[in-house]
Image (cartoon, rainbow, N blue to C red):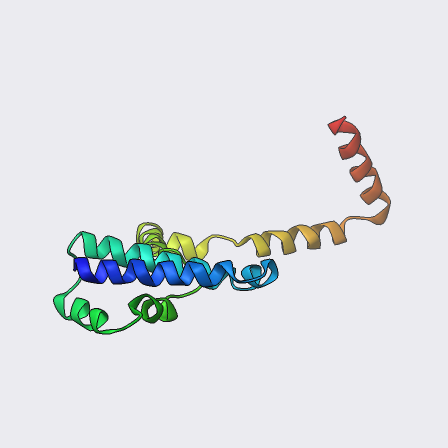
Length: 137
């Protein structure tokens, strides 16, 4: 486990050295991939430090020259801790059940407000907006 952590650290060092060679534009272009690589490094080393990875997984990763690259290639971009995100969503679904499905979306509420505004007579539309603006002063 400690040798795998050391190899991951070395992989990260080389990865960061490669990033330093990129232009600012390229860094922005690859920002999501960089974040995913950092997240995969942190998550994997945390799991290794807490002895929560299976020995077969450790053996497999240790045989690779670049285990960090291997993990990062499979890590979803735009996600720092995907399992946490999904676990939170699942928890919300479990706790709210059918009420969650029945709740009106923001999109539906905006469409309803737009429909109501369109139904309002044109002569009062401007007056209402003017009164609202004046009341905020």
